[in-house]
Amino acid sequence: LTKADVIVVLSGGPDRTAWGINLFQDGWAPQILFVGAARDKTGPSNAAAMRQTALTAGVSETAIFTEETSANTLENAQFSKKILDQIGTKKIILVTSPYHQRRAYETFKQVYGKDPLEIINSPSGYSAWNARAWWEKPGSTDITVSEVLKLLWARLTGEFS
Image 1 (spheres, rainbow, N blue to C red):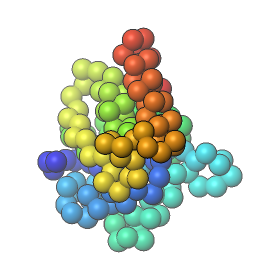
Image 2 (tube, helix red, strand yellow):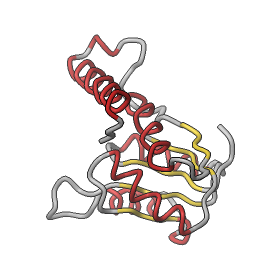
Image 3 (cartoon, helix red, strand yellow):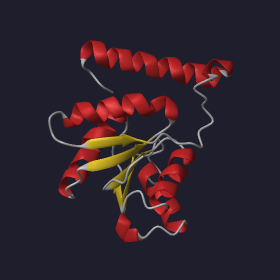
């Protein structure tokens, strides 16, 4: 882990939010971007909910950005790029769950193409998913197989999701 311009936290669970906030509070970056729409369209976006958690934890409102419309990993990268480009970001710390980290990284790299962006991976250390025992829980098995298939599809077809 090295210092960056922005910590980018993809929605998907409270463990990601907590990990991103802790990285921010430990001084790894001066800004944090929370990313993701709400599954339930009647409530606040996931990004807005993560923002509120950060504010409650004492993160300054001026240090927080939100992207509230992306519904999948590809959109997370595409819509985040617009914000990151606007603020002149050169280096990010990308936070997601450990099982999702590789695909998220590959998707951000694909979206940025030749544009320079250094991506430092920092999977949530609070995740219940375990790389050494993912097959022991049915939910972990399902999500692991799904991630592998999505990554293989992206590599074979060039289509990220």
